[in-house]
Structures are given as structure tokens and as C-alpha cells.
Length: 186
Length: 193
Image (cartoon, rainbow over all chains, first blue to last red; front, top):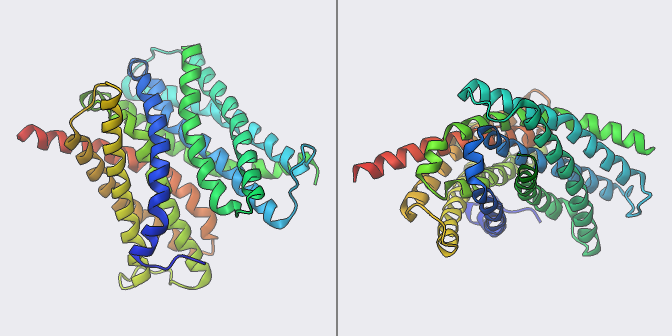
């Protein structure tokens, strides 16, 4: 049943979910806080934060929306040989490989233009973005497939559950992966 | 369809939305990179950033989706008359939920950081920043989401496909921009007392 259009009804439907998601996001905030010094020292890494989080969330939510639709249309089977699953996984990886080098180069140029800072070389920032992107694409595929499967096993509508879960989980993974990659490469 | 067909279709469908939000994300990043002084002045603020940005996306994405569905069902007219009770209720609820959730994030972050023994700004500063940022970005995002979805619908576009990219792009940009304005305002006011 759709939610009634009153402030009270909308709040009752939304607020609990929002509060839980906030706790999850604070987890990624703590990770971000833990490498604060590094982020302040290399501003191009700080510039990467919102765009990496956002793109990771988008990769996950696009994939989740497509799987939900296939699921409702009955064209999805949870077999490793399923063409829908494989095709969407390949597309997610290809999107990441296309977009993340642009993100890295964009972050480097933007940092240069705004603050004249080149403490990290262009290739280094592109490498950080691309490595994070590929890891995030793989994680997005795993998270989306498993949450769609869990929703299906529990008889839940993937539209209601999977998209918010996947988007916010990918947000968190975005920060965690960026942190991990920065430790290795910077 | 073969794996290749599915992959090509999915790729083409998603690329424009990803490209749009990429631009928004980079602009947001530049603003965030430019507010290092404020982030240093208010310890704990960086910890709040993901939660505040996600709240914008969740609250105003849901508002947009709700309006898009209502347009499809003919529940509301694609026109801002100010008199539509449903639209007013949905916008008020979004604003209230956004501010409440931001405040909750600030309070929990304060106690978490205190518990962990990390350096953290006084509670009133963090809560003040969360409320001012939530209120200002909420007002602007409500206006943007409602007008873009209405304008798109009147031009014959499917509002469902507009909402996502619009909210992710503007949510990040206005989210960080008003965070900066909020920090400066709260620090200025706190400096007076």
C-alpha cells in the first residue's frame, strides 16, 4: 500500500530507515576521519572522496535497479551461467574502467586549478582512482547480487530493499576502498 | 539476449547518468578540498560528511521518486501553485526528516568520537552546523527537485529517469556548499559569544 501523503505518514515510513542508514554512514565517516592527516596533506585525495563515494553508490544502484526489473519480469535466474547476471556484471566493470580514470584526472586538474597543489602526480591520482574503481565495481557486483538473492529468498520486493541497502553499502565501501588504496599507493 | 547484448545495453543506459553525477561529485570535491581550514577548525566534521551527503541523497531522492510516481498516477499536477496540500506535505516531511537525521548524525558522531577518545568539536557547534546545513540545502534541493521533475514531465520526459541523476548531482554539490556556509556561519556566531 502506498504511503499516505501526510507529514506524519511519510515520516513514519522514512525516518527509521534514515536513522539506521545514518549509523552505517557514520561508520564510513570514522574510516575517513582515521586518514584525515593524509587527506589534508594531499588535497587531490580529499577531492576524490565525494566523487568516489557517489560513483560507487551509482554503480550499485544502477545494477540493483536493473536486476530488480529483470527479477520482476521473470528473466533472472540465480545461476552463475545466467546471461543477465553475467552481462550486468561485465557492464558494471566496463563502466568503472571508463569512468574512474576520468575521475582521477578530473580531481587532479581541479586541485591544480583551485589550489595550485601538485603534491601527488597526475599518474598517481589516476592510478588511485582506477584501482579504487575496479575494486568497487567487483564489490558492487557481489553486494548487489547477494542482496537481490537474499531479498528473493525472503520474499521481499527487491525495489524496496535492495536499492537503498546497496547504495548506502557502496557509499561505505567507497570510503573503505579509497582508504585501502591510498595506504598502498600513496 | 547474449551476455554481450546485455552488457552493451546496460553500459549505454548507465553511462550518461554516471557522467552527470561525476561532474557534480568533482565540484563537491573541489569545495570539500577548499574547506580544509574549516575541517581542521571543527574536528569531527569530516566524520559527518558521508552521513550528511547520504542523507541528502536518501531524503530528496525519495521525494523525487514520490513526486514522479504521483505524476504518473495523476495524483498531482505538474505545476507549483503552492496550494497543493499533498505536495506541501511531501516537501515539509522531506525537510523535517532531513534536518532530524542530520541532527541525529551530529549527536551520534559527537558521542562516538568522545567514546573513542578522538578530538571533537563541542556538541552545539556540530549540531548547529548539521541543522543549518540541513535546512539550507533542504530548501534548495526541494525547489530543484520539484521544478526539474515538473519541467521534465511537461516536456514529455519520464520523471523516473530524471530524478536519480538530478538528485545525486545537485545533492552532492549543494550538500557540500551549504556545509561550508553552515560551518562559517556557526563559527562566526560562536565567535561572538
